Image (cartoon, rainbow, N blue to C red; front, top):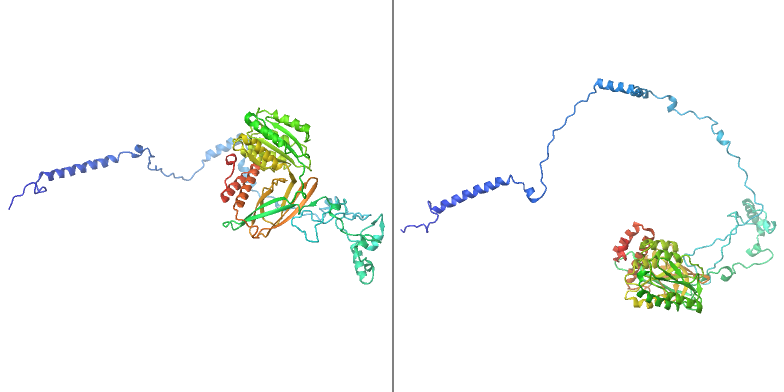
Length: 586
């Protein structure tokens, strides 16, 4: 058998390598144990920078025993109180323990004639005064505000003037019998018949008495011995209100959103039916130019050109004026003037003399417009060209919009044009929206100012119906915007957007306006559920949401109510429409 070497049996007992391995294991064990013991004394919280947790400190419980008052201390306190003149509290407490007297708890008995003193102040009732002359109530039971159309073929609506009633006349007067009509003094009965007289007359008529003598016709009662035609007055005889159902046309388009099961949406367009039926009415218009330094002379040069073009669109029956403002307002004429060669030449010279200088006090300048003479037969229009950068006086945009709109109350229609790409769009846009107008922003460059100004002037130069108001049926659940309707212009049809509950069969509304010196009235009854009115234009719904958002922004400018801002956020979230001028609101 061959002998084994160290290479053949490296782990054989007694080999030196095995001893070294055992020694290394022992040394490693000792080193790791030492590291473990050392780690128990190291504060790792301080090393990592984190908070150090300490064990809660334990406190010994406090035990309270019986508390006893030392007699000497109590006596010393009472002696000190008596020395300074304090009352004896112990005696006062004992006195309060005494039962109250019987009279304190038992109320005294009432005397039989206890109310005699009060009755002396009351006087005996007197009989009501008897009227010596019968005064019938001069009033007419009529429908003053028509909400739903009631026009039928052969039964046209009749309008009569309101008749002033007689003061102190009785509200209800019993009917007079023929014999009472004969006993008159100055054409009036001496006294109205009583209920008993009427009952006797009716009962007696059954036996051939007084009631049998009642005339067979109303005419005979009203005018004995003659005849009188009733309800034969024409509209021209009794009122100056002109029904205009045939001079205006209305068209409605509906849109149903598949995900909105509750509401439908519509677009309503109103325009005149013909030129000969509703002619153009004269107007009062003022052209207002911002001449502050922020406009710059280069931009003002093109604004002057635009104003000169606007003069050409003033009608021969119109009245006009020119104004400029910076830190104060100046006008070309002291009052309204008509268009003549002399006034036109003066206006052109005034426009050419405008220069850009000074600060911008927009609110004070707009406030001066409220001092203009207002003729109810003429619509008043203001065309304002500005950049809206107010830097003097009232400068907060929301306050300017709200305060001017409250004071104006829709009397002046304000149309604005932003003459700069950096214009305050929030201010000039909402200033127009809240005052029956619209805005035009020049976005390309100052070279487009003349054409843009002339385009705005063309759209508002021919009004046909002023002070237009829409009133929808009270039973119709709809929201229509804009709420403040502008005048009706020949070159600019009136467009409104509404939301209604699904299932509504028709749209019924009344429109009232002023055509010169003649008040006008119309009632529309438009179907909503017909296939011819349905549209696939989804912008109808979007435009309604945008119009309501603008309405809420205007409400916030006037009221500064946080509830309006909450409603604004909900509208934007529900209809996924962005809120314009968000930085100016939030």
